[in-house]
Length: 188
Image (cartoon, rainbow, N blue to C red; front, side, top):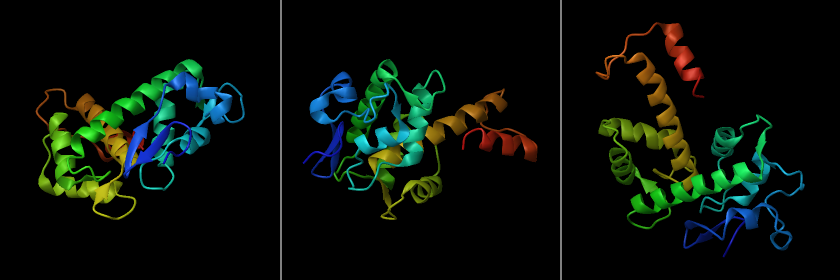
């Protein structure tokens, strides 16, 4: 069974269909650009996406993705930018499938550890529990596709900010309380 215009569900796993240009505005599929404005808003993109759980795609994830590709700060993506969004989501889907070892359609704590270790992160077992707790919107002890993307986006943004202060690259920084707040607020 397929949901939305661009991503569907098959055996609880998110799958992408066809190509970005087709799904952007093709009349036979009602297109992602529902209002035919030439710009896909976050709500239009959210309606076109499925996370494999029969729940709406995480709106925070959608806004994060839109903001990465919206070069003109118009609150959405045009056709050319949508092609980048499409590739980005397809790439994440492939990563998700790689680490969803039990094909459950979710990433559990051990799978998350394998994924993030594969990305180069060295985190404590306790912190993986913290990540699951933070990004498991369904409270099942595992994260869905969209929440996995959001977890990785937030972790990367926090890491980028941390590295700006970790000038000697030893994994330790000393910051004031206001510097810390600025770091966090620049990410959230």
